[in-house]
Image (cartoon, rainbow, N blue to C red; front, side, top):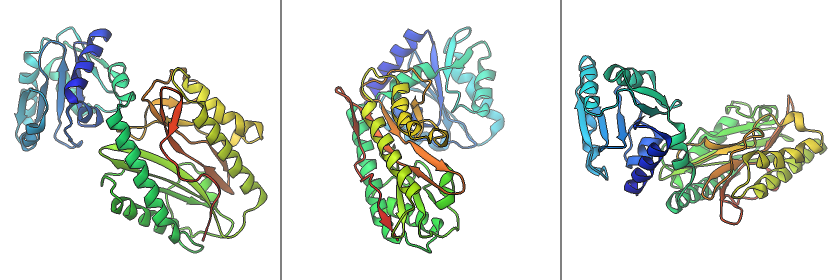
Amino acid sequence: MSNTRLSKLTKQLQEKGFAALAVNAGPTLTYLTGLHFHLMERPVVMLFCIDQEPTIILPELEQAKLDRLPFPARVFAYGENPDAWGEIFGEALAGLGLAGRKVGVEPRQLRLLEYDYLRSACGEAVFTDGSAIVTPLRARKDDEEIACMRRAVRIAEAALTATLPLAKVGVSEKDIAAELFLQLIRHGADTALPFAPIVAAGPNGANPHAQPSDRQLTAGDLLIVDWGAAYGGYAADLTRTFAVGESLDAEAEKIHKLVQAANRAGREAGGPGVPCARVDEAARRVIAAAGYGAYFTHRTGHGIGMECHEEPYIRGDNEQLLEIGMAYTVEPGIYLPCKNGVRIEDDVVVTATGSESLSTMSREIRFVG
């Protein structure tokens, strides 16, 4: 698998006029190598060049991982003394012939730590944004990647189903979030979750990125649960909104139905060749037509895969065309300050004939507690 990805990367480098791509610990390095390194005080950098085998610079303590590297590489390992690290970087880059040539980096991932070592080792190279190299590779998921995402969704749905009996009047948002975390791990999620669950009830639900608090659920609340799981390194990101108690006021019921309809419109709008903006417009139109457009305060969705947020971004000004294998969220919402909020989110993958929602949990209003 990784050898195929390496070939695709080389083709991208050639087409975009880059001599190399330099990546540090993170999703792209894992995508290309199958190896997992975490960001820490010891830098890990791998350079993929168009005219020679890859070069990796890493701590000596991480060398054993290279036994699983699926292709040959030049290895430069360093010890614990930071004073010697610059010299190792210099040795690694000396023979790569990068002077005066473009080297792509990931602006959202590469830290000043790694950049300084690279620049000091080869200041004559032109380090520049390499997103145009990486994005086409990672945005289109293959069958194996989609299978991992599908499994992550199933785990997430099962975990929330097991958690919901706890959602009762008098139970705090934090208690529900803690139980959901445990259920995700028990149901088979990777221990590194894509993000901490959002559990927000009543007025707290009017904040799209609320953190679980000590506030206790109250009858009449709308309860937003935004949660995710990862499986095989691939993420699921879902949201459902529930009603607490036995009844809802008319407006809360109305906005839930509106968001449900907007979610459906967004899910149905996607397909190969469709601009991301059209998906956003389809969902937003439903909410705006009912007079709540000012309360839908964020984009309709974002790409999802090895990262919870990645390309493509489903927003009104993005004319990027969807392609088969791209995966993204559809998550319209209405947020009424000091009252309630609603969000319904699904994970969608583009197919040859349209799009498919990987998530199937009911989007109808459900009463808890």
